[in-house]
Image (cartoon, rainbow, N blue to C red; front, side, top):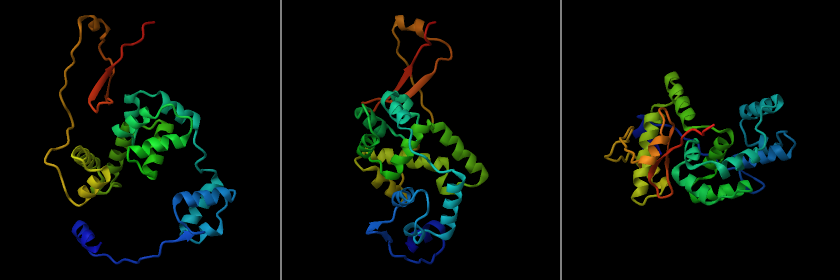
Length: 246
């Protein structure tokens, strides 16, 4: 660990290893802590109090007192969007990649949240990323909003140098390139963290053409929205929709 951190940050660090904690034989996790608090009528039980820092307990109690705690998911909204959104709408949602969108569409019609989790697991999503993606679907958070948020954080100096938008794009490009060669996303991510890079630079723009038949020309208008997405064959595609005639 010290060798890795020294290569990355140029300094050695001291470590204090703490034995992994458990509650009633179950490994401590965010899910377990939330469950304990909810089952204790939004009071911090002793089982949670003893495994969290005092500052964390204080913040949790303040947030609970102010009523600023996440409620239950709006499943009606979440499932409707997952069941009815087009490919380009899903791909425009933050934290949903092409593989996740494909598995979501294949798994329709959803009637419960655990069915969606199964589709995301098939796409290689873990628990944390699955929750994040479903929250973005529920709240209609777009990729552009996340992009602008990160760029704003960069200007404020909040984002570390190795987590800038350019670094994120570079990492995503590398992972996508390695997945095409047979690696899993997690394997490619580990190789990227170890310093491996691809010779091909990420594409920030590209030229494309459109072949239309004569009878389709009358449907085109200046300023029409063009929606890019990855189709079920894994091919980059574009959707043009003329405005509805009143």
